[in-house]
Length: 110
Image 1 (tube, helix red, strand yellow):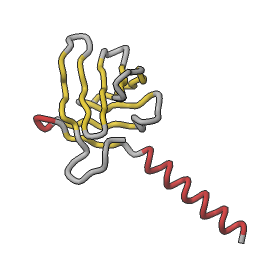
Image 2: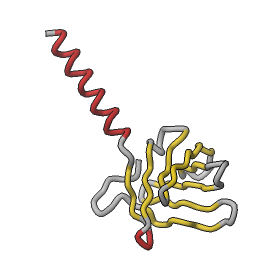
Image 3: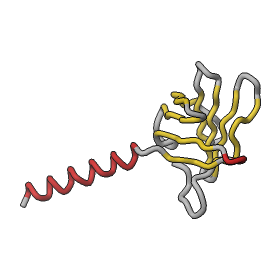
Image 4: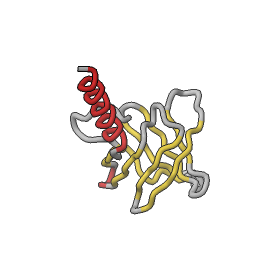
């Protein structure tokens, strides 16, 4: 009996970790697409796949409650609130992907 319970627990944990590892695909204004690997609510680093390139973004503290991540190499900035997110070019001070959402009926961004 204990072995069955342990096996079921291990299978559940494995499926949970696999589901979290799946990137979240977002659709942004003007048909742009961004994929986010990681959980913006708890991870200190996430990966952003934008225009065929992968960017490692590091968490930066904020006073507003928004989740902010920056890639010091490219200068990109990812800002996420529960209902939407945006990708900014920090060097030019301009948005490059706005109003990014998971889609109709989707849960808040993770």
